[in-house]
Amino acid sequence: MGILEKFKLGFKKSANSIASGLKEIIVKKEIDDSTLDKIEEFLISSDVGVDSAAEIRSAISSKKIDPNLDSINEVNKILNNYILELMQPLEKVNFFKKKEKLNVILISGVNGVGKTTTIGKIAKISKNNGNKIVLGACDTFRAAAIEQLEKWSNKIGVEIISSSAKSDPASVAYKTLEYAKTNNFDQVILDTAGRLQNKKNLMDEYKKIANVTKKIDQDAPHEVILVLDATSGQNVINQVEEFNKIIPITGLIMTKLDGTAKGGILIALAKKYKMPIIGLGLGEKEDDLQIFEAKNFANAFTQTN
Image 1 (cartoon, helix red, strand yellow):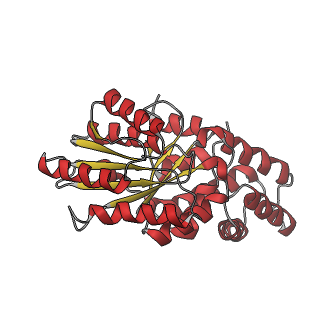
Image 2 (cartoon, rainbow, N blue to C red):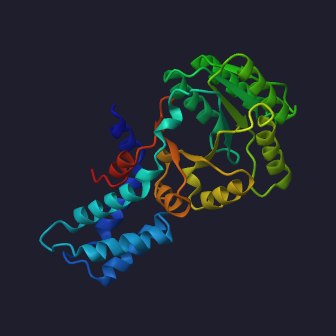
Image 3 (cartoon, rainbow, N blue to C red):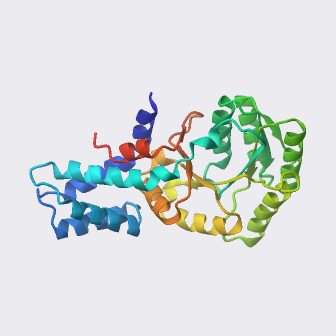
């Protein structure tokens, strides 16, 4: 299966929702103000965000679609172009490339978004690009999280530094970086415990993990990636807001997109924060983390078959 086909399959639920919604709204050849209002309201209800919905409405209005053309198809083209223009600057394909010096990635997110699984998938892509990788099991709250990361390290053939459950996460981070620097690793990927963005003590600990990495490399962490669950819809907006206050986020990964019709939330995030989008989780298999490409996302999101 090609990459575009994977995107299309992963966004099938979102695309079907958009396609069927537009089909119900656009029943006349000429798109009048009433139809434009309905399109805008529908896009907002599809999680694309108030600002993006208004801009898409404006783009449709200014296009003055020829009544002799297929109106739904023309609206889809406008939506596709809007997504491309908004999201192409947010691609970050160099994220997975071979590193010239030690690169430290801190992975964060609330409970249950799939951080540990996502780390395994990131490590596999990065290793395949020639990077020597060590994982840091800094989620010491759950013994299961350490075991899960160890399974991933064995599965894809990368090293891991871990400690016993309930040990100090910052200490694990320090040991991982120390080991990586001594043994000439290219990349460190640090797992962290799921934490609610409104729990101050947990967020302080998250900051401590980031700060301790600077004792080994003053520029670390080089990447701070927030993992988001697409099924959470508009709740992800608040998560980005709060996590970004603690440590500036350098990239986003959205998981579980294949299981929801809420894929429009990516557009809302892109419009509001303009943060790089690293990858999209389009399934549960180890190869189902897809590197974000705006063209593939636009084509998958606006597919009609």
